[in-house]
Image 1 (cartoon, rainbow, N blue to C red):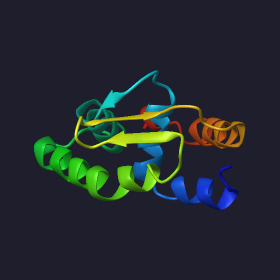
Image 2 (image 1 turned 120 degrees about the horizontal axis):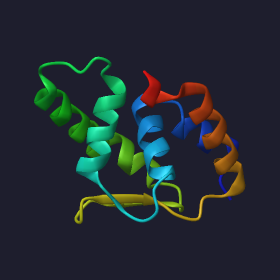
Image 3 (image 1 turned 120 degrees about the vertical axis):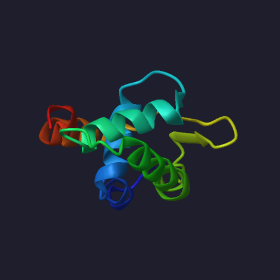
Image 4 (image 1 turned 135 degrees about the vertical axis):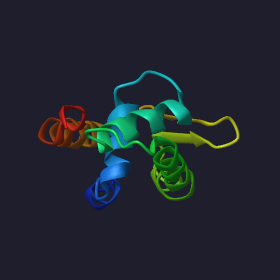
Length: 110
């Protein structure tokens, strides 16, 4: 069972929250590139001209920091070799916090 400390730790970083929001709403594995594009859109309002540099920064940050951290819980699977990640079988406690956080933050609205 996932603890509240673990949930709060997962939600403590904005970029990781954005990744989790997107993954949480998808069924099945999500390609890292798709996840990065969404995060880049949500972080940049309006989008910057130097979007490739931003894209690369997000890829590195996700692959080396945020996705390995999220994969520490049993309901998030990160398959680095296949370049996909997914949320599957999240406990109700996590569902509740994700729903509330997503509603409060509304990243796609800028």
